[in-house]
Image 1 (cartoon, rainbow, N blue to C red):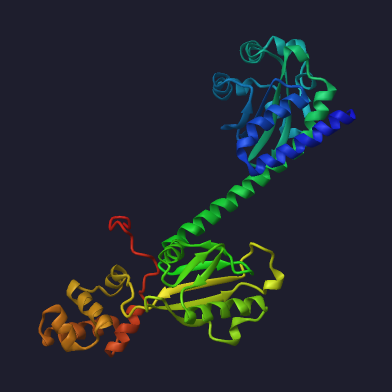
Image 2 (image 1 turned 180 degrees about the vertical axis):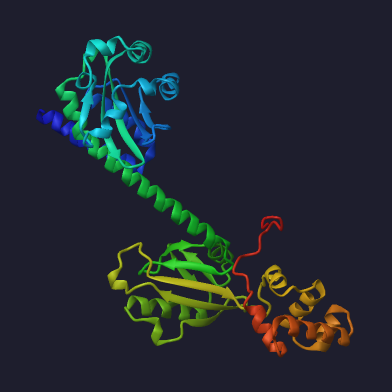
Length: 383
C-alpha cells in the first residue's frame, strides 16, 4: 500500500466511525468502501444459524430487484455465504478459494444473479459470528476490475474490523438514545417540575412541567442561559442551593426542602438533590436536580386506584375526597348537599373498608395514592 493509499485508508476509517454517530452517512461510506477494495457493489447481511432467515442491513450499488431475488431464491446458491461458519472472523474469501472459477461461471447463481449485475466475481468477509447469527460483508467485483485478487482480499480484511466496531458503536449509541428518550418521556408526564443543572447553574434538562414553569415566569425564568428566581426570597433560597453544590458541600447538613414564594404569592416546595461534588464534574454534567411542586391542600389523587383497592362506592369516594379537602362532617355535608347522618354512615363504611380509626388516618391513606402524573389536556389521553 502506497503512502497515498495509506492516507486514503486512514480517511475511510474515520468516515466509518463517523457513520456510527450519523447513520445518514452509511451509504456514502459503503460507496467509499467499494472504491477502496475495488468492488462494484457492497452489502452487509446476516443469516441465522438455523439457515432460516436472512437480513440485509446495508447496501450500495445493488438494485432492489436483485436484493429481493437474492433473499428469496439465490441465497441458497451463494457458494460463499455459509463458508464463514468454519472460518475465522475477518478472513476474506473469494469464489476461487472454494471452487474452480470455471465451475462458478457455469452455475445459475452466476448466470442469473451475478452476471446480470455487471459483475464477474464475489468476495466475502465475516464481520461477526455468534451462536445465533453470522454477519458478513459481501463485495461484488465488476467486469472492468477482473477477478478477486490478493489485494482485494487484504483490503477487505483490513477494513472489516472497523466496519464491525462501527456497527457495535452505532447499536450502543441508538440504545442509549432510546433509553434517554424513554426517560425524558416519563419525566414529561410528571406534574412535579424537574430541572437538572450543571455545576455552573445552567439547565442540562427540564421536563415539561419545568419548561412550563419557566415559560410562566411566576417563580423562575430564563435570563440568557441561566435560571433566576423572580423575587428576593426565592432568589436567596435558589442561590443558596447552588452555593452548596459549587462549594462541594452536601445538602445533608441542612434541610433539603425549602418553601419558595412566587411573585404571585403562590407557595412552592423546592427539593434539591446534589448529584456529586461539583469539582468532580465536567461541564454539561448534572450537578443538581431541583424538584419544584406547587403547594396544594388537595393533591391530585389516583381515585381509580383507591376505588379499586378498597372497593369504594361512588358516594364513599366523594366523601373521602371531601374529607381530604375539608375535614369536618358539617362542612362535608354542606358541600355535598347531604345530611350529616349520611356523611357519618359513609365514614363508618370507609373506616371499615380501609382499616382507619379516625379521619386523619383516611387523609394519610389518601395521600399514599397521590398521583405523580400531570393531568392530560385531553381527558381521553389516559386510558
